[in-house]
Amino acid sequence: MKLSGKRIAIFAEQKYEDMELWYPYYRLKEEGAVVTIVGSGTAKEYFGKYGYPVKVDKDINDVRADEFDALVIPGGFAPDHMRRNEAMVQFVRDMNTKGKVIAAICHGPWMMTTAEIVNGKNVTSFYAIKSDLVHAGGVWQDKEVVRDGNLITSRKPSDLPAFCRTIIESF
Image (tube, rainbow, N blue to C red):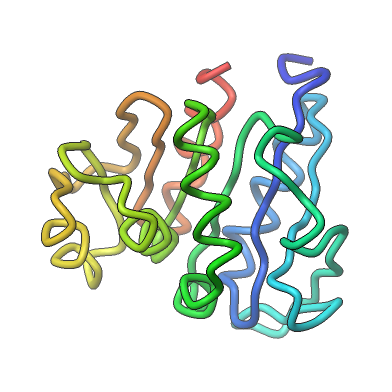
């Protein structure tokens, strides 16, 4: 189990992309990680784009970056809600300052732009937010997964195997 003892947070909010939350959740647990679903504080349960529910383990106001080794930010419409929550944005900044893994897929990199951590970094995302990443100073690439230091980004659900593999290899 490659991730035994590692603590990983996964952000959750309304309209998350179901596969982009659940696939990493189970894959990382399979490798021995302790995975915690962290919500914005607006609800105790969120529903994905396709209606699948996820219960929150912790509220963003009850966690600190020091408690985790990595953060996963799923896509869907959830990141647009997440980036309006200053505590979630600050958590991303804190994880980055500490050099901890931040992995975002699809629209998840929006959180990286709002946290202002992509300037000069190689990144990817769902094509619809490419210009947001570029305007934030990111060097956008159309690849299934891009890793630049502690940042890992992917484009869409079909990239999940490469995304999760890269998260695991980053340790």
